[in-house]
Amino acid sequence: MSTSQSFEIVIVGAGFNGLYQLKRLREAGWSVRLVEAGSGLGGVWHNNRYPGARVDCHVPNYEYSMPEIWEDWNWSERFPGREELVAYFDHVDSVWDLSPDIDLNTRITSAHFDDDAHRWRLGVDDDRSYDCQWLLMCTGFGSAPYVPDLPGLDNFAGVTHHTAQWPLDGFPLDGKRVAIIGTGASGVQVAQEAAAVADHLTLFQRSPVYALPMEQRALTIDEQAKNKTDYPEIFRTRNAPPGSFHDMERVNLSALEVTEEQRLEIFEDRWARGGFHFWVGTFKDTLSDLESNRLSYDFWRDKTRQRLKDPSLHEVLAPTEPPYPFGTKRPSLEQDFYDIFNQANVSLVDLIQNPLIEITETGVTTGAGHVEADVLVLATGFDANTGGFTRLDFRGADGRTIGEAWADGVDTHIGIASPGFPNMLMLYGPQSAGAFCNGPVCAEVQGEWIIDLLDHLRANKLSRFDTEAEHAAKWSDELAGWADKTLFGLADSWYMGANVPGKRRQLLNIPNSDTYLKELADCANAGYRGFVFA
Image (cartoon, rainbow, N blue to C red):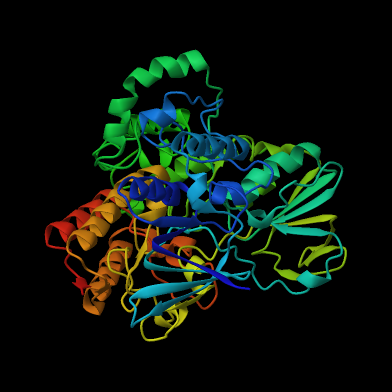
């Protein structure tokens, strides 16, 4: 017998955004329920269980700013691993007591808007259902794993897993012949772990990753206790322009305006700091001027080649000419990724020079020959930004699916709402600052904007909103302008939707969180310009 539950608000997704919304909306007296497909909290950190999974934003940037959360919490490392992040979300749950209003193991399979009732009807992959007036989608930009069409993939007789679909209990790589397809963030992280224990590790690379030194280090409780005296100010500045990271301000100069000695001094300083400092903390025109960008690339290339003992790997892993502008694909952070290629048990296959022919029962065949494997790791990324929506039976006021509405490209109103899909709001979604805004910061800052809008609806006894197509088209034009005035449009990245065949090539996140947050503020100050209320 089917069961249906009614709420004013349903939140989909239990990551940073979803949990923050649940806390704040519950405090404001809303009838609200959070549903999560996974068996635990944390969103991507619950799902990404592959060996070496680790955040690429250092703490305290990557955590909530509320004192009741951080006062009694301490991290063991500057860049926490997956297990510690899962424990952090359990800590958040224990402090805010969120679980009573969360349904885990609840995968939404359909979302249909009832135009007469002004409500969303949500179907689940069992006999339950929900209906709500306001639907908040907090599925993030990395919730839909992407597996390319690899000939013969189903023929492989060994163990195959996508990095985002790793078994909860894991499985050993010790003594195995491991093949990893893809060298993005998850590929780099799995490779570092596998190289230490595998009988042999082979990486299949389509384009080189520009991995940066993580500069990981342990954190002591005493050190954090001392630093916490500054946390209120750290979080105040983190959550305000410029940028969404504490202690990562860039030099307000062009790389071409300084002497070579000054430039190298800044490069060396940011490189030594580790993390994303060398990506976003050097010069103001690194991501907008090709000549300046090339200086960053050359520095990265030379630093990387110094660690590769085999000169034949230089042109494959750190080519003389950049395959794409530096930083226009999200850099991965590494601890010993380039060092593993100095080991006898690690090999690299360049899929540009030696294309993949087929997956066989026993391994991978490329133009360079056949590689035997026991384990095949698909580090092939996500149908980013849009996949969490288009893979659902998601239908708006006229019955069209969101996949049909976005078939020729995504149009949203400031990355918050989509025309024709009333009463639905997106956090960290397509055409927001998303991938360029620190997750917890967006959860709080973009999240408060959502709270204010919902309060506005309730205070004015409004039962429905939609957004105007002309404003959504203007926002798409705005992002296209950012693709043109930066270098992001020159790379075939998931930022541009270019990693999934058939997907329109367009910039899917605005690469400036300050501009994005100002757009949100301007919209609200103008009486929620672009929204139509009923």
